[in-house]
Length: 260
Image 1 (tube, rainbow, N blue to C red):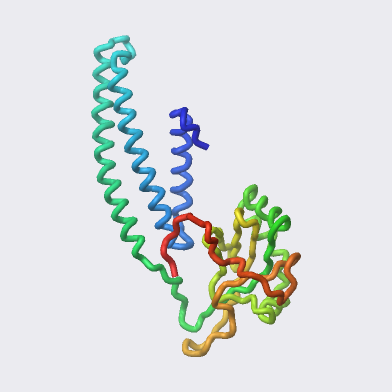
Image 2 (cartoon, rainbow, N blue to C red; image 1 turned 180 degrees about the vertical axis):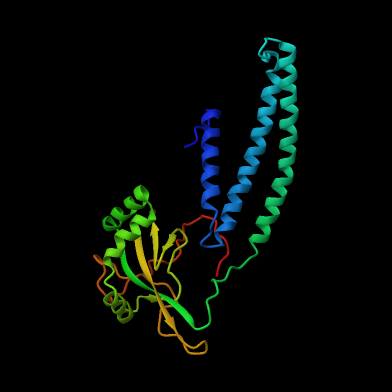
């Protein structure tokens, strides 16, 4: 966490955060998320520009304290002035970076992302394997925080009874053309399983891909096109009518990219 007081510690935190972002941004499961990332990067460029200005000022105002290794104050002050000039030029170059990122974000915000295309005749739907909330979900959320999403998927896969689970989902209508998610939900896929989870609302859900092959012009089998709440293995009996769990939160202020 940033200290807002110790520049050495906060610089190390920023470096580690950028290293993590460089790793995480190798693949975007949802291209609409790029808009949110661009917004955060734009704010980061502004902050970096300010940091460079402040570093330049520190070298300039403290040049009387600068010496070289031999104790020569004149040489040390010259080095301080050189560092000041280079930092000021670097800060000026960031103005151009800011403008380019800002323009990229504006263009990205005008994109309406469509689902990835599928091969003709190859159709996939998702069947609900398990839905947990409250205390039952807390255990899985702890696994996610401690061991990662792959471990959580492996844990929840124990609820999958194969064809029995598929038939139960088909009978009760818990089959989806698109993965049901809310604006604050996180989604990750591993093999045939897709995990959705939300720490704020305290729920987790595991869905399994159910591939089907049909003629391109054939009508789609019955499946939910409007996301609705899947059955909880411990809380909601099959067929019980409940409110839409995945409806967008009216209090959410998290910026999102435009996606269909």
